[in-house]
Length: 396
Image (cartoon, rainbow, N blue to C red; front, side, top):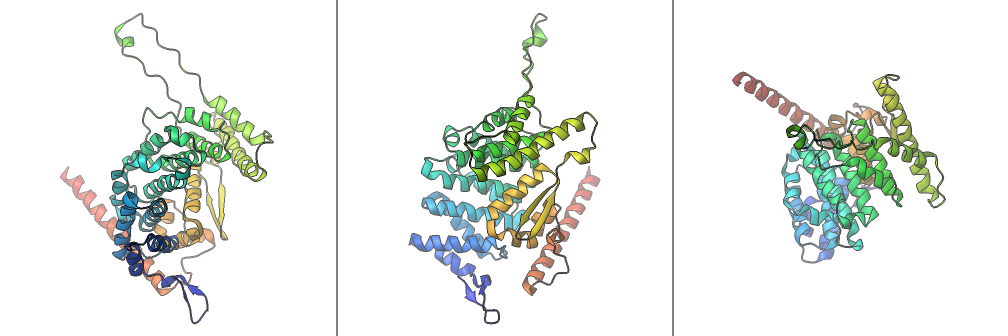
């Protein structure tokens, strides 16, 4: 795939050919198809310019593999689709999300056996990444929220900690983009179970979900008032369920300051840091509700370090989403952060200066051209959208 640059002597990643990749994806030999998927993933990880129509041809092959490919082809195809969505972003409109939902999503995200766990995780992460990049309206995020919740409730998912942690993380990543959650979702009941799981990743996923739910002011469900109450004067209302938050806060404190000799040291260190942050956040949130702190101080500021790039965020929802992107994109996270302005600047409000970079930094000509083209396209769409909204206002 690579080619040695005659001037620097380094391997040039720009030697990637999408035409050659598409050809490999159409080969009869599965080894060639897997190599084509690998090349496509590496190019998308490095934020390749995906305007070429042949990327859409490669995407069509990825969706074909989801139906008819081997387990490895399906896993890699899910990853390629998710990375393509993050690369293209809103330009993909609803096409990618709709195509993913046209599949039997539960069959794709629920593992058939423990050996199928990696493919199921790839499917869950793909849906979360695609929603994060392409969802423009709250109902699109709510659709993904419902799908991941259904996956969490499956017995096959609960039996495999790796898949359960991925599904809970995906649900939490999408939650800030949804306006409301459906009545059959009981996140605090689920989180109580997650915080007592034996697997550290599951407990940490539950901790993130708890912090985001509290930040978004999602309250425990109260029982509905039955219809008999309005028709019979002697009908007695059921007793309200006890508040689950004190028990959850107590469990968070245990995980933050308790000692569990069964934990592995490295996992214990990460878990302890996380739950101490959550414990601090919950205490500050309680004080803020009592009027002792300003709203600004209740948000913990978190720094995410990647390749010398420091990104500071002040909300749990943003922190969880950025951590997910860092994990999902992998080695190409720094390239996406520098060049993927629609995602990191427009969606997260971050600038390239956050990593010590400035807008005046010298870039290769093709990257400068791509940045200008994206800015001009967004300005043009904004002008057209504003004009359309004004016309609708006058028509009304």
